[in-house]
Length: 293
Image (cartoon, rainbow, N blue to C red):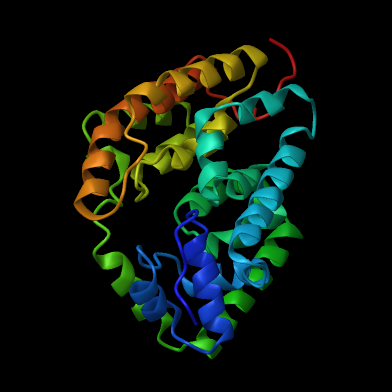
């Protein structure tokens, strides 16, 4: 099986899926054939496996189409204006890199997708926990538990040592640093004064989960938006950050330096505005999306 030319972040999943189909070790193969290791647990590869049967570029395009299609459906469940939330730089970054952020954000409104937390425990886990009043309801709870356990069981059947291989692959990923440990990041924990609100719980959880501090990691913050005005302001602020970001990040030390440079910019233009929106609301368990200004 030949190596893959870099096109998007989904390429690592495409290559891992091809390795599984060929009966090879996806962690070893990705490490030797790609410019980036496989940082995902094996259940994530199984989730994306149907897309990996397509050619490389088409696989990434199809993944984007499904992710944004589901998210658009979720956002428009009560009104059309929430589509403005997709006019943000994190959404653009997610689309450019064919990342998971779109479909993982949709879990908040489509709780049947909660099983994806076994594929990406960080972002998906934060959304599932923050919106547990939805994801923990029956029968969605039983559905998610059944699918998640099935993915884990199949993963062990394919590769009994996959957990060890996965942990080894992320051991050297020093860029996966929780925001709370970055300069100024602890301020986001103030969101807990509105702990009854799911968006406040989400921001606090995103603050402590390991992440690379890439723009696409912040896409779930659109769940903090409640009005058209907030959507427009959030979109404007997100693109205001672009001229100051290092977007050609590369790998290795270059990538680490880019992350350190971008982190405070994203904190100011994405995370702090979300915190301000949350703090302007009462501490009540009202997560209904309003369709007015």
